[in-house]
Structures are given as structure tokens and as C-alpha cells.
Image 1 (cartoon, helix red, strand yellow):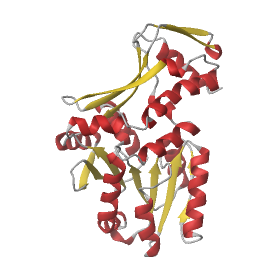
Image 2 (image 1 turned 120 degrees about the vertical axis):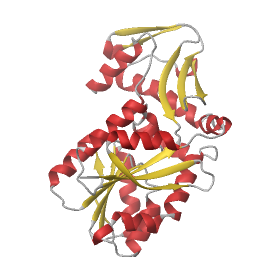
Image 3 (image 1 turned 180 degrees about the vertical axis):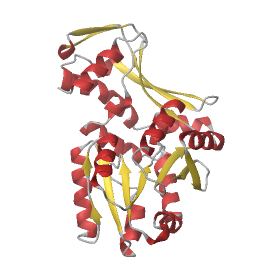
Image 4 (image 1 turned 45 degrees about the horizontal axis):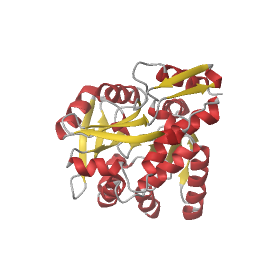
Length: 318
């Protein structure tokens, strides 16, 4: 049993307003479901960011290898690296001196990624897949003594899963593992017509709903829970004033759920909700304020043709 998972579930489900921390989405099945979400037509984020990385591939390369030095492309939460491969392929073709370091918590996802990299690039790509959380990976990379420039990728609007204070804390902590001249490429989902945002999370196939409900399945599997996931329904709500989309699992009937490993019985009133995630949408002012507060310089910014999404290149200064 994962002690941290057990403790966090106990704390979240006994809170006055129940919640499950969003990092627990990504067990093996959750990671697989998220790969399916990224391919949904309503989920515009993947297509927009892929367009950016393909269009600005050469400009990004010039920034990454400024001064002609080698670099380590560190992909936090790599998944199947669908978007990152649009950078990797051209760099390999040009014989660029770099290492690719995908970081992910799901062993099967990393294994599949490694197989795909081997199949496509054979011995032409130097890579080091790391089955670790972000900070374990950054600690190991810092301890390695590798002199190559670190280029950290945090794509797909992962930063949007944090509120403003958490985002700043994340970037400040990340900076402790970096040196002057290192870079961070951050993906931000921009504010836009609310209907477009809402539909991206309430897809017609119900994949995002399954992704959220998998949290209950995971509690059942790992902690001996008695959740009946069909007694809950997924509900996203977007606030265009704050730019925050919040995700919930709502109890459709009054019920009691026992979790054996926690020796805990949780009561749910009908229509009581479990909060599972936020996804923050940003403005240019938000992005500039965050970078400045966290101690980075915005070197460049790249936006897709619809202005739905932007990737921001941050520099760590001396």
C-alpha cells in the first residue's frame, strides 16, 4: 500500500468539502485514459501545442543550443511524448548533440515510449527514461554532474493544474535544480470562448468522465474501497471570471463507502461532490506576472494560429 496515497485519500475524503488530489489520476489506467483524451477532437490543447512545436521547431532549437553547447531535453510528465517527438525527430535528423530524458510515473507508458524511440531512431537518439516523480528526477539529474544545459519541458498546460500560488511555488522549486542559462518551456492554455473550454472537458465519448471516475476505481483496487463508480457522475464547471475550470464527481444518491485500508466509512449526501482537479486558463498578464514572481525571464513566446494556446520559453538568470 502506498502510504502517501492512503494518507491523502483519508485527508481528502474526511474534509468538509471532499477532494482527491489530482496527482493520483495517473496510475496505469489513468495514464492510458489521458492518452485517449489527448486524441479527442474536442480537446484542442494537443493539436494547438503540436502546431506550435512544429512551426517554431528551428527557433526553439537555436535557443536550446545557444553557444553551440549540448543540452538535455527533460520532459516532465512525458506520457507517450506525442508532442515532444515533433522536436526530437528534426533534431536527430540534423545530428544535434542532445539527450532526451522523459520522466513519467507510469512504467508501462515509459516502456512503450522507449520501444517507440528504439524502433524509430535505433541508436541515433541518446535518451534516459526515468520512472520517477518530478523532484526525484530533477534531484538525480542535478546529482549526476552532467554539464549539459538543462531544457525542461512542462507541456500540455500541466501548469494549469496549479493555482497561482502553487504555480509560483512549483517554478521556484524547479529553479533550485537549474543553473543560469538553463531553460524551461511551459505550456499555457489561454482564456477563450467559454463554450470551447467547457466542451474540451465534457467530451461526447465520456473519456474525461472515465478518467475522473478511475480515481474511485483506484481507491477500490489499492485501498479496499467499496465505491460504486456508477453512483457518481462527472461534472466540469468553468468560471470565465477566474479562468478556472473545476472538475467534480457528484454523488447521485445518498450512500456510505467503506475503505478497508483506512478503517474509514465515508458518508455522501445525494448530490454531494468530490473535487478532483482544477485547470486554470491564463491571460498574457497572468503569465508575465507568474514568470516575474518566480524569478525567470521570458525569452520568447509562441502561440498557435487560433491564439488558443501558448508555449513560453523562460530563462534562468544569474
